[in-house]
Length: 341
Image (cartoon, rainbow, N blue to C red):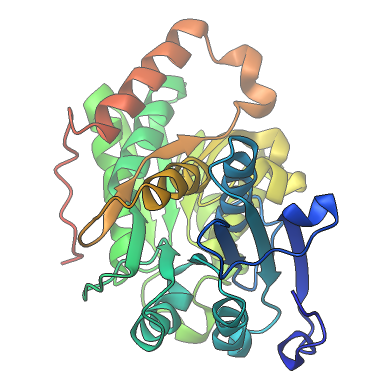
């Protein structure tokens, strides 16, 4: 790869793996060399979430010889998404992976403009299909359901809470109504208090930590001893409040115990999309020339049980693992509408 190309003078970071380790530059245009490139969103490669896990999936694909070469470009600014994608196109990469819903338009436009690469959009539901576009999505209702079930199992007060970004976002609705359903699935007597960030400034979407913090404090005052939070920085404000009040918390979207060390003492676990396993699986399927149509629903995972490892019994761990598999395989439906009312 020619690092002198102008596209790399926009504050980007790039890392290469595979054939370059042997001192050879890859010829990704060759049919014998299978290359995949990852364009991160502005959260960076060490986000403890989808970017990092997607890269780990590519590393595993290299280890099992499914993939010959892999690279990533960290996007410093959202305005660079298109240029970063184009860099991998120009270098002949077979698969180009983009991460997060903020990149869905750029990914769709790239799939239209460049018919040869396969474009994989992680957490990018697409309404339109393209033969070279593979959208991977994760079922927020299942993740919320699992979190609600866990919260209902570990609560001691019988009251649990969820702090959520605005319900006008379908993904947030699915997360938090899933949480409500999961709690009721375990124990209908558990009171699940769910609060959305409604009638607030749109400029603070996903970054309203003060609102998240204050809302979690209110729920704790109302008796909630487990707080679930979804919605970027808004949710992280709630997780900080849980840690300060010494109540338990369940994170979403990334491993919050790692992403938010100051709240790690409160974290039971976090639930998020399994981007690593999905990337590894689809590298194998794409190289084998498998076909797909429309959005592909990926499995979700949870982080280690963090500092509460000793407080989560082996029997509960087994039960939660079974519930996860039952949800992922379709053996249990959450009954949550996919669209917010």
